[in-house]
Image (cartoon, rainbow, N blue to C red; front, side):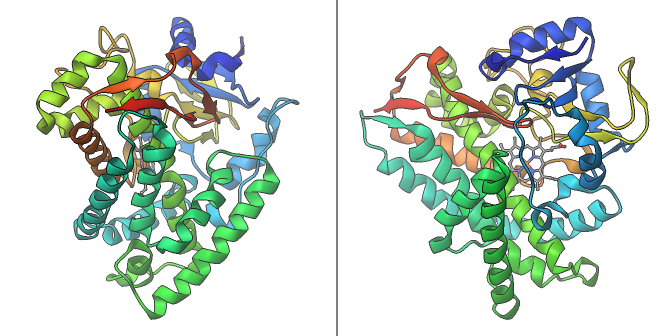
Length: 398
Ligand code: HEM
């Protein structure tokens, strides 16, 4: 039977996962926005799906049949072809291998360290601007600007363009209606084309310049590939980090004894981050994978032409793997798939970890008391087929 996930799925997905697990590791469901997909909740099956080369990521193949899985009242959106064509998550080997290699050589430890120095300054500036003892929206005042500044710094978006770029990408990241996607996409494309031209003649110390001036001749990319790759980094690079920080703060407020552990020994933050990544699961679903032939996953036959999503948050909260999966426990040794697995493993994981560590360290240093100004039940979440986002988080820090 195909289960329809209700509007309350976004508030409490685990209630649904508990039920799905009873019928097996793979379930056919209609997501709240009206798309029918197969969701993998079993830990072993999820890990093997993420590595399974039979499942295809080619966006042209996927969109050729995605329409038939949309319910009549589905939220209809679009994507911008020039921006997403060579997105790493939309291509299979050998194209993926070539692009990922070029990205890996450009995004080395040296670039990351320099970005880190600037991110640290921004993090401390943002933390010291938070008014002590006043109610603030932590997403707006801290998590969102911090997350965006990291990826903007990495890619090389000039300071004066950052606010616009953030605004233009919102319809693309949150799968808003087609007109908004097209307008935001056109603006972003025009800016990136201009920046690429500038960096070709005057390279800076950023990802865009490095991709435009590769050290290895096999890393020379076409303009379309290059623009698609950097827009991929921008679009994949802030919503998840924003969730890690804001939902992570929520989790620590809900687990005061764990917050006390970090407060008494802030050197534990880097290790604690894995437990927060597991608990938050900032990318709750993998991106879509498509079946090009009938395949069997965990004893379930999935026909050709279907969309498969791994429920990363279900796997990270699997009661078969840990006895209290919904509790944060910094004494545990968390295993998680928050950054995925296999060839599509997150390309920004090091930046995300660095930002997460800096963010929690700065908040612990600046504020002794963290207080939530609403009930957990009143929090507003939004959902697309791959994201689950806390819209705002009212807190008082002092
Ligand atoms: C806490 C923050 C983050 C989390 C939890 C996260 C999670 C993920 C996951 C689960 C995937 C794999 C999706 C799949 O296999 O379908 C992924 C891929 C990716 N992520 Fe992240 N991500 C984060 C931050 C970032 C940042 C900061 C960037 C860029 C600066 C980024 C760029 C990418 C890219 C480009 C891919 C595609 C890699 C490929 O297909 O080869 N991510 N991420």
